[in-house]
Structure formats: structure tokens, C-alpha cells
Length: 351
Image 1 (cartoon, rainbow, N blue to C red):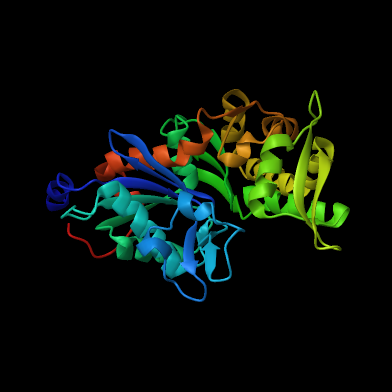
Image 2: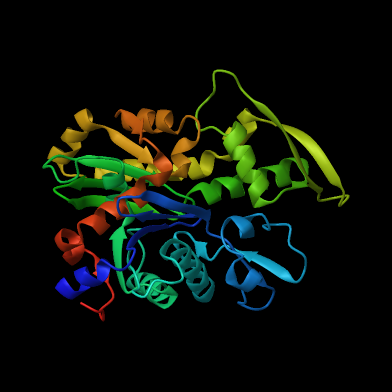
């Protein structure tokens, strides 16, 4: 490990929140240095990334749903895990180069947050992708632990801390005590499922077809989990499935809330199910400590309210909920000597 520490003086080690929708990268003492969509643009039928391997992230997201027949914009992460190995490798390589710099002689150590419910094979795929993308040493940490640390919860204390991380592809629910997960549940339901629910509603109700980016805008602008004091409306444009022509309609926050009912119910069930499995003393702690929610899905209006009503506990949104996991990986990176034995990592390394 001493040799690895010396090598670390000449490399920029990083923590990565490899999300279904976005990838965030943290560097020690600098905080979050990169926040870009997990999207890659390739030539159709190949794994060749456009613009000499640079059509990744923000550039590629602008192409989603708007590419000509020769180009495909791909999201290589699905439900929090790798769905396209080669494209994920290209994406990670681009982000690592962007942060570390092309001229770095020593490859970086990387801490990556992954859903707690993924399989050993899926964990191995993340490690292999990161290695091939240019990492010297790869450590994996469970997302709920990283989120809890990033949210500032007292996870090392002998008391229960509950974190609910609602991401794009997964929702991670965990009760943490004494620096370990006491009980948890990981479901493959998140913001993407909410977007899909909006798409299906407009298609079924109005015969209007819209893409994922526009569905996300609808969710953000008028979506809610609980009734609003003042209900909202929004114009939505898309393609009529019957005539095939462009058309615009007006939708209300009430109908979008109804459309989102199923994914929200799945998240509530995961939270209540985790509480039901908790030890009595940990459950008692949560009466005082409450629940912390983070991730993009926590920003949906009324999400804290419906969870509070379902559990009877106080529910608070973390400060800067989108970056909790990334900030947590940075803390792991700063304390590798202390935490390394608790994390999965690549077997062969320089230390």
C-alpha cells in the first residue's frame, strides 16, 4: 500500500457516481469536478464513438431522440448497471481523461458507487470497465453508504440512520448503523420509470408520442407525488400517433400525478418494507432521527410528504441531493486505508 500511496502523489484519484442518468466525478480537496449525462453518441451498428471519442455526456445528450439514421445516442447504464460493456468503457475513459488529463503518467485510483442489489457478475463488469478505461485501482462502494456519508448522516454512530436514494434507474433504501448497512432494499425503479409513465399516459390518453427528454421536462415542471396548493398546467408538443403530424396539447399536474402513481407506490413499498425488517431498537431510533432522502427523484414535489405520511416519520431532503453519492465516494477516497477492506476491488494492482 505504501507504493500505491507514493504513486497517488502523481495521479489524480477520483470518486465516481456512475449513474443511469448522470455521472458525477469528485476529486480530493476539489469536490465535484464533472457532472455530465451518462450518454454516448456512436455510429449506428458500431461501437465507434463520434468526434474521435469525444461525443460523450452533454454533447451526446443533445442528440437524444434527434439523431439521423447513421447516428445512435446510447445510455449504456440501465437500472443502475452496465447494459453495454464497450460503450460504458468508452464513456468512463472519456470522463477519466477529462478529469485526470491525457498527460498523466500514473493512472488514477477510482472509487465507484454501485447499487447495493447488483450481482457479483455486475460488480465485476463495473471493475473491468473502469480498469480498461484507465483506472489503476478500482474500489466499489454500495450507493446507500456513499449517499449516507455524502448527506452528512452520523453513519458511524451506534444509532440508526435511514437513507432513501431515488436515482434514475434504481431506488436504494437502507438503515445504517456503526458504519455498516443493518438492512436495505434495492429496487430497479427510479426517475426513468417516472418518465416512462408520463410517456405512456400521453400516448394512451391523447395519442401523443413524446421522447424521454420531453417527458422528463413534464415531470420536473408539473410532476408531483402529493396534491399541490395550486395545481399546474403545461403545453406539451409531440407527434400524433394517428395522423403522424406534430401536435400540441395542455396537460395538468393532477393527471401527471396520477400517471406517476405506480412508480411512487413501488418506492413507498420499498421504504416501508425496509422499516418492517429493522431491528426494534433501530426502528425506535428512527422516530427521533427520521429519514433522509436524496437523488434526483427526491426533488419531485411532495415526495417527502408521501413518504412521511406512509411511515409516520419525519422526512427531510438532503442538502444538494443530486451530489450526495459522489461526495460520499470522495470521503471513501480520502480514507482508503480505513475503508479499503470493506469494499470490492480489483484483485491485481500495483500495491
